[in-house]
Image (cartoon, rainbow, N blue to C red; front, side, top):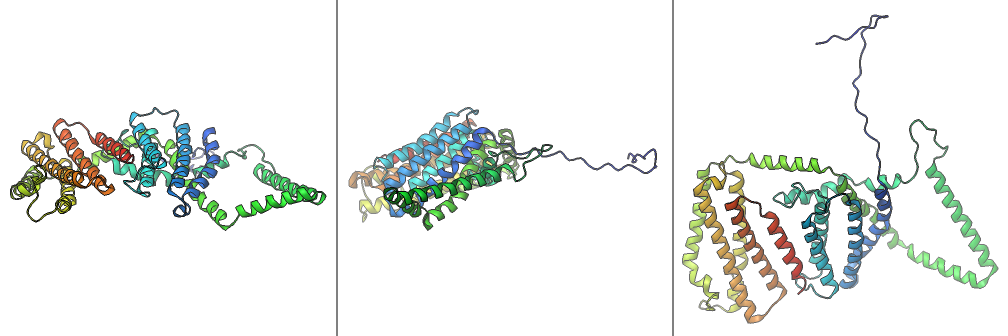
Length: 439
């Protein structure tokens, strides 16, 4: 170990303090400064659209939401201009646009008036992540839950104070090594505005005393301003501040995230999932065999009942409505359970399923049985709809069964080819969900 050096004159050892790198000062781009100021009225407009939304018509609410969506997307495009536009980002933006257009055209009765607004928000946030290239894998994939956590929680709150810092950067500030003005430029600006406002009020008062017609005009303007600055307006202004901070944190904060660091985090997460591969293949082989046998027995016992819709023959004692409704959602839950089981098998098996023939065959059988359950559920709905017509709930049920069927098909494709199909399934779900609003 090197001993500390001694001073040549005093003979005392020299002590060297550790040098820490200086944190670079905050700087905001010109676009961030402009959009930070623009976000204040935009956030107020957004909050105003949701404030007492139940009191107004749904059409008015979606009109205001569509106007806000145009402003929001324009800001995101301006901030993400340097980034290449991925093709899938058009899917999420187009899905949100179709839903808004359908509601404005008086369509979209399948999901009512509440769920479409939720879908628009989900598509908009995910579009920001996709358009800016800040998805963990660079594209949609199996890390979807973590991407959603980034978009809805981590990025907006990590950059929650970015708007006020960007807005403050619009004003000149004291630089190190240069003399600063006595009260500061920002204080002078505020004082100048207050002085000008005071003089304006004095001039208006004098002109009102000189002319009665102008006095009535000023009185009407003051009454209008007073009606605007009521308690509700002040409350909306107050609540719009954190809302705007969240929205700007989502837009500008996401654009400030380092894509390489996000890719590294995605790879680290994928590596952590790979570390789960510790379950012996024999365990999953036996488990899959039990599941496959259970469904085979179920089909054998209930075959006549399950496949009656194909031949349009009902079990004895059942009406069409009873036959169609009974067991539908249970079948959908079973399909979801099978997909969850397959995810566990593919992520925790000590040997990948494609390299283990028994697990591969049994997983294929499980997915085939799941697809058969989806077909049975759809046959029940088809019989129900052919007899009684479409209703919103029947269309929702049909969409759910089709999405689960597509999930099984995509899982089967990935199982045998080793290629990723999560994005294809997400695109199918988003596009069909948006198109369903046209009914």
